[in-house]
Structures are given as structure tokens and as C-alpha cells.
Image 1: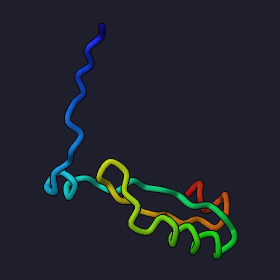
Image 2 (image 1 turned 180 degrees about the vertical axis):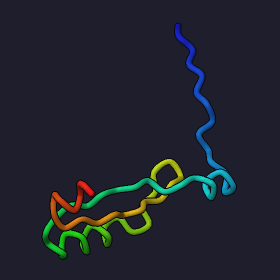
Image 3 (image 1 turned 45 degrees about the vertical axis):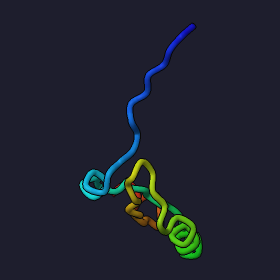
Image 4 (image 1 turned 90 degrees about the vertical axis):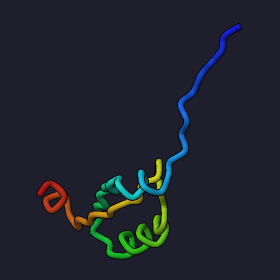
Length: 64
């Protein structure tokens, strides 16, 4: 029989506040796509970190 030991994944408030947000680049030429994406992801967190949404309206702008 295999016994598994997992690390505690709870994050206290101090740890969560020290983490920087995940950066997500939204690339689309339609402003509505940017608006809906912001609306849907508002308040989303992953591993105790929020999101920082970055916006580009063309491939050239995204490459910069």
C-alpha cells in the first residue's frame, strides 16, 4: 500500500498579499472582447493570486 503525503496548500492572508498577480495578455482587435474578458475574469484568483490583464489590439502591439 502506498502512503502519500501532501504539503499544506492553505495560504494565509500575509502570503497572498505578497504574491504578485498573474499577467494575462489579451490580444484582439475587438474592444468588446477585451471588455467581456475583463468582466468574466473580475475577481478571479489562482493559487491565491489575482490577475493583471494586459491589452493589445493587434499582433504588432502584442509583440511590443
